[in-house]
Amino acid sequence: MRTAVPREAVDIYNHALALSSQGDFGTALREYSKAIELYPRFIEAYNNIGEIYSRIGDREHAISTYMRALSIERNHKILLNIGVEYYNRHDYKSALKYFRESLLKDSGFLEGNFYLGMTLFNMKDLRSSEVAFARVIAIDWRHLKANYMLSYIYYEWKDYARTLACLDRIRDIADDKQFVNKYYGFCHFHLGNFDEAVKYLTVALESSPKYAKFRNYLRELTYENKIKEIGDLDGRVREMEEKLMGSRPTIRELSHLSMLYIFKGEYKKAEDLLLSARR
Image (cartoon, rainbow, N blue to C red; front, side):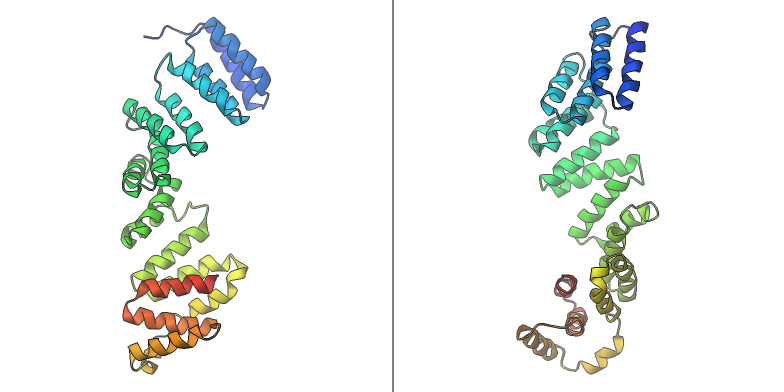
């Protein structure tokens, strides 16, 4: 049971907090130390000292300060902060330990779930990462970064419906419109909604002038009347592939072959052509 923090220590703590917000970290550190002298179990002061050290790039002192706070109380926010220090070092195994412990203290801790998801994602454990990000979404339906990450994961799994659901949640608040429109476009591309694919991918690419040629290519994706000219589909594909192997393909040629692949249902090959055209 924690005893009440003395009024004088609280006043010094608040003064330190104001100094820190003004960027006067040196004076703030000294003031936090004074507050701790008056109340040695002042874990909030330890936590803020750790955050200052983290902000100025002194991670060793940040971690050692957080550890002193944990020796007083295994607080979920301090466990998170230590985990973040290890996460920023790319020491994901150590970070994972602290994030998991923070969630044992408070399973509904949004930041803990988000960083757990990011750590597992970086460790290539997409299944467990998806579970953690889904918990974030359960807490904050429109959490921007969690929806970004989930849309990426679902797209990797070829779960285009759930990818679109994530994008729908954040489309009006997204700070990366190109990302959103690109993934909308590719999802519709795979679902066979080629008009929608062209619409979204064109919007995504219009923000990048270097992709002007690719944008023109996209506009040719929907020429359904070309099917009348195809005839022997497999033979036409072989002919086009042999032609492209012998010379540098034009945007029109890439477009034509891409549509042949689409008509055959070979969407991965079609997407590879999309990406090569973009490059």
